[in-house]
Length: 285
Image 1: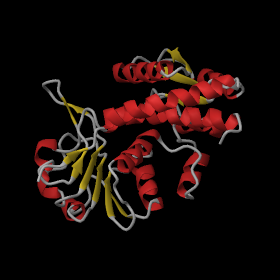
Image 2: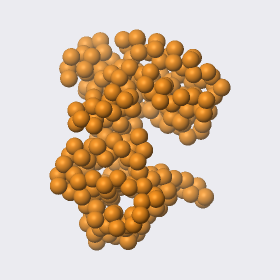
Image 3: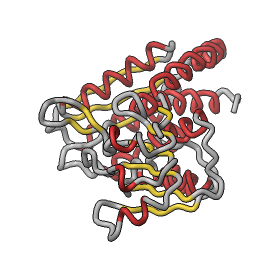
């Protein structure tokens, strides 16, 4: 068996094309979707992510801007800027690029963003709404994964799902979304005893552990849907996921590649959340 590839890049391109009409309709109502991304420091990876987010917005006709601060900036300055953006009617989404420098209280910064502009879905109010099954904003990476399940016609109801990873950004919200979709969910991590025993039961396996090629073929149930959220750079400079793609694609029924799988969907769903925020303000949703 060779797994069917779930092509995240193709799906992301398709969705972004569909977003253009929604952006134009909002602009006609005076609500052109606007996203501001705040970057603190000069982390190279963060700079690339922020550039891609801003460019993604501009490519479909949204308004977007980047606000940058030196790594030594005090937290109060950033909080003041967030307060200004909260009050700005032209801005529908605010995102603070993580990680922040160590002298920041990350939770306090995320909580300072107005819940109705928290397009990352990290505010406690939005996390609570997701847990209750009535989300305002879904964190972008898990949101993208759910769209990939939809594209792949993956029936989640009644299925055994295993999520490897327990982060607030991916693992926890991913588990909640799977629960809300009717799956029976187990959340594991790299230290879970008999991890392979759990993963071999999984009809749906989501790897978000941050360890290159951590999931091997002997850990995968034949025919399972394997979603690789990880992105790791190897010593030779090549990118790979948390899943040993070459081995696992011979066992799985469907699988996402790295690159070209979940990655393109993350920014796409950030655009979706920002458009949804603007639609709510315009009374469309």
